[in-house]
Amino acid sequence: MYRILIADDEKDERNVIRFLLNKYRFQLDIIEASNGKEALAQLEKQPVNILFTDVKMPFIDGIELATKARELYPNIQTIFFSGHNDFDYIKKALSLRAIDYILKPIKPNEFQQTVSSVLQNIKTQEKELAQIEANTELIKTHILNRLINKTPLEKLKNEYPSIDFDFLSDYSHMILMQFAEPFFDRLPQEKDTLFFYQQIEKAITNFSCDFIDLNPFQILLLVKINGESSMHTEQIATRIQKQIHKEYGINCFTSTSKKFSSPSEMPSFYEELEKDIEDRFFYSDTYVYPKEEAAPIEDKGYPEADDDLLHDIKNAVIFGDIVSFKQNMNLLFEKYRLNLEISHIYVRFLFSKLLQMLVYDLPLYDKRTINKKLEAIYSCPHFSDIEKILTSVQNEIIKKLEDERKSPKHVIQIVKKYIHKHYQEDLSLNLLSEQVYLSPGYLSEIFIQETGCGINKYIKNLRMEIAKDLLHSTNMKVNDICKNVGYQNLSYFVRSFREHFGASPEKYRQMDRKKKENS
Image (cartoon, rainbow, N blue to C red; front, side):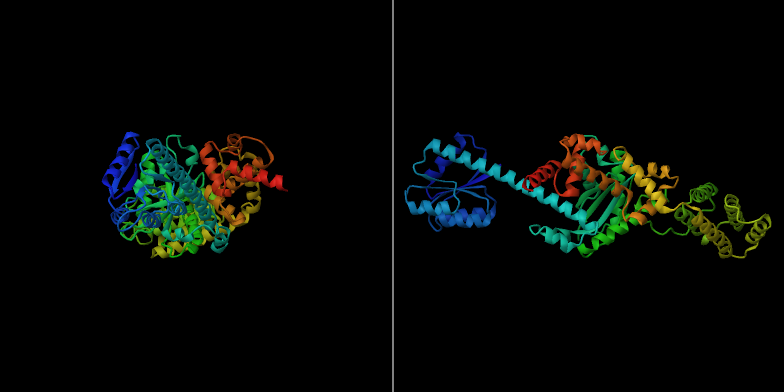
């Protein structure tokens, strides 16, 4: 409800105005003041939308009151009324952007028309301000996208001189969320991005954050500075993961950044987040990264868990995934390196089984050499000696895998070709890795090494460029372009396009046509 302040030193006049406001059923919160000084005190105490003031009053006249009111509230709507038909007063009123100047006695029809006009002005102004704010927020999101993708901060400031870049200093941490399937693009219509943000707010009480969806599989949360809470970012990430699983029934993986002291650190911190979250391919039950160092294991042997680990090592060798191979070998070493409560007989049996499995899949040794190493495992006085034997075998296997595995550049070309041919379809890391017979983790790693960006980002960039070309060269509807480039959710496609190019598809098409006309 809007608030109106009636300032007049004559009570009867104030009563007339109140009567007319009620008669014409204007929904307004009405407050009164009997002089300019009292009116100014009311303005300082609470915001006012409309000032209805007499020109001549004790202490502070209406002209001075209106001046001070505009200093407090630049968008306040002012209506002067007076019994003095004086042109000088009218000129001053108009210089203060008064809506109208009403002479006493007030004519009811004139009064009704003036107040209606004022209310319409307020509503129009609110819409304009909301549009400006929405455009500003869109530009800020676009700036964040480019900043984390290593566009220099100074360059961004030069490109957007009207934007106050102090908003970047509000953020203290980043949390990267990764989904196995497209997230926003698959949300039911009743569960839009606003609903998602509400779920995040439930998980991080006492904190606030902004978010940008980087691509269908990734969302970046920017946590704002909060000096009152002692909760760590890892705890926030854990709560978010649990809330998302509770609400949507899906798992998301998160990686958390350290606290950054300057916006210029954000690109390097984001790069670390992407590297940290790649570990999700190696851990089936860990959702928050970077993964903490495992404490010494106190369990007295878990053969089933060990069998799973041996199975993962075997698959890593089969798929030529050196990263996963080394990772799982290290896990096995760490599990027993300080686990003094486990029977040394079981440890010797486990690592002799590992040795036989490795040399069986890649026959590096003859039978005599294998038996010699097995005897050494059973006679080693310390676990570190067993570790040295297996590390030596591991290094030989890695060398052989490096010699035999396919050229990464060739693999990337195959993947790129497949993406360009099937960009209209659902594309996932698992699907692409199947095309080249590699594990998802290894494909992701070499794709970044060879192209400088992740697969999801590459797919999004391709789809955005194709959408831009279609807007430029065809009259296709935006909804048809959305489907043509592989998106199912129109609102998500429009938002993604805005964040990528800084304008909606329709706006981009209009600007493109103007360029053609002017050229």
